[in-house]
Image (cartoon, rainbow, N blue to C red; front, side, top):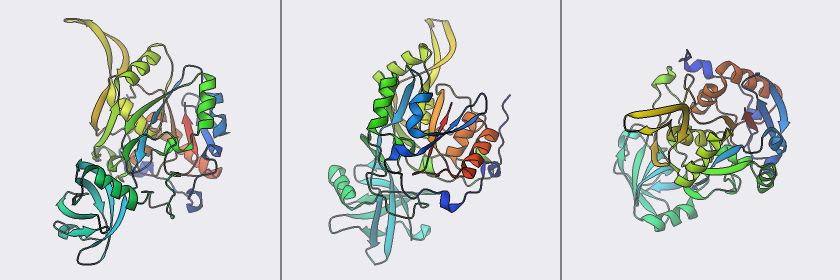
Length: 357
């Protein structure tokens, strides 16, 4: 029986600020790679360019192809005063769920905002953590203004405005994230070529990163944390190929915690049969789906479809750190993170990479 350590303090660690990467290495695939063997508990220091050496023919890497919106908008109240908002999720063609700074929460509803001569908005609703803003533009016209005026929404621990190509995977396709699926930032066409030469297969899913991914945990008991919904897609043909690989005994390797959450959200018991006679093979396959997920993975969770994971180093006391602790074991992850700190690995969005086998 797996016991869950519920106290959030268990998932804390101290990090020197100088280890927080402020920009990616150039080229981004020249970062370092920490390899964690979940079975032997061995920790290996490597170069990310050598990743293909640790993969096998038939392995499947699953990437998140969501594209980051320049979601940070700077404006002013009509009555004066600077306001910064972070777009989170489109609710209607002219309405977005947002985080709003610099305004008292209780007085936000009804406030009118101006971002340019062309773009204005009004706060029409307020939830616990977020607000809804209705804009004067809609659909493609609204998105055109967002792309023109917005800044890339890098996390607060990055003390510079990132260039758009720095905070975007080279394979990004579907516009909708307000934070990058950062594990994919290190991959380049050069690495993809090496992977394909090795016989490693590459697949894509979509999860639009929002508040569910980066919202801090504010409760002491981790099981009480409520995660926000995020939109995801797994199409029929991709699901078919993934299931074929799984049946053939090949490893499914998720690139990033967002890819993990898509695959685990879509996993179902592998059952077949007629009428009342149903046989379950003891394994899980994925079902093509699209919609909203609130899946929250923390220690005690039993993974159903994902066999291995490539990910960044994550913030202390975050839902992402809890996910990898669930995957590899809390004590092993804490030991690995201390090793990385001692070896001066670069942490967080622009930092180095971890492969958990």
